[in-house]
Amino acid sequence: MRQPLSIAVAQPRCAAHEVAANAVAHAEAVRAADARVVVFPEMSLTGYELDAAPVSPEDERLAPIVAACAGTGALALVGAPVPGPHIGILAVTGNGARVAYRKVHLHGDEGVHFVPGEHAVIDVDGWRLGLAICRDTGIPEHAVRTAALGIDGYVSGVVHGEDEAGVHGERARRVAADHGVWAATAAFAGPTGGGFARTSGRSGLWSAGGELIAEAGTAPDDHARAVFRG
Image 1 (cartoon, rainbow, N blue to C red):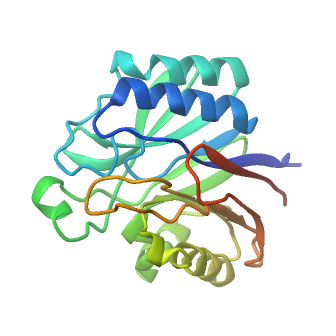
Image 2 (cartoon, rainbow, N blue to C red):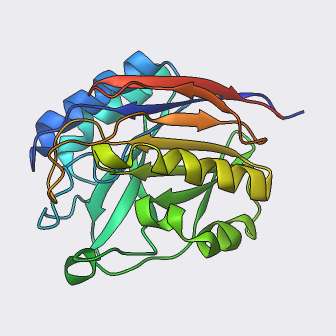
């Protein structure tokens, strides 16, 4: 029998390009979340800065997150530019980091700086979690192709403006309803690059029936937590 999976969506404070300082904020979020999986927004480690240098999984600046994961038993899914270059998700545990996902559907000027990746799933304690980053969630084909790999949940990190606060919730509900999977979306909070003077926050988690079960506020350093069952 598969055990329930505790999962949190976090929206830590972020300073542009300051990977070391942002890693400390991520580590604090991991400890505060008290969850098996902690999901972070798109490019949360650098800010949404399209000229940010890629962060290698071996980068020593990830050490605070590794330590936090070692102390809590968490898996942190951290948004960052990664070698390729890609807009990616680093899967960080107490044993180190690896690139778990590379954004498939690039948007606007992202295509000038990055190349697209491929659909991917990670396994956590018997739960298969499909991964997505921002625009991926707005392309129904992305969820279809990810679901075809066999998933129990659809997990994403996004950056949306304050005026788009409802977008990621609508997309998460659609994916949950269409594919019968749980959904978790970590949304950026606070200012960041790309013209985002104000971002949406309101990271959330949705049941496999599409019901919102937990939601963060709009401020940096908030988080929401829920338990996936089934």
